[in-house]
Length: 144
Image 1: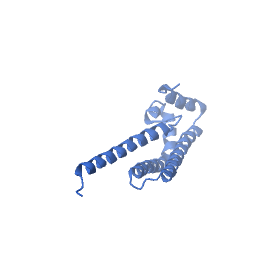
Image 2 (image 1 turned 45 degrees about the horizontal axis):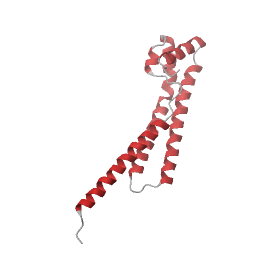
Image 3 (image 1 turned 135 degrees about the horizontal axis):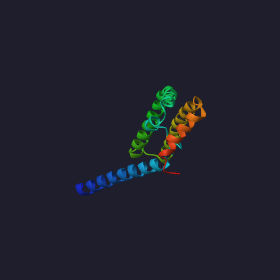
Image 4 (image 1 turned 60 degrees about the horizontal axis):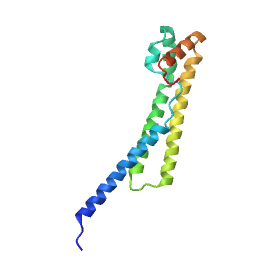
């Protein structure tokens, strides 16, 4: 019996579409499951603060930035590895669930570092300067 190239091509196309659909669903899942920080302190926020407050905040943030950068790198790697695993021929639901749990834990660890960065900055500021930080953060908060 002669192999039918049309059948083989159809199977290859269907497998490719399944992988694409899985990647899209994974991307949607990760985006909807990712919790953003309730308070985000960006460079734009810091630039709105008075100069003495800026200096104190930047000094506090500088200490933790390498740790946060490392945690965020771990999150990106875990997310990339998870996407590759789900698209791989060795996919197993139980293993994928373990990898999702590991990704959530890495996200949580990065969030804890970010939270500590903000609180460490707040610890070093007098109440009036903390109010400046909150005002800078709140000015562009459209969710409340």
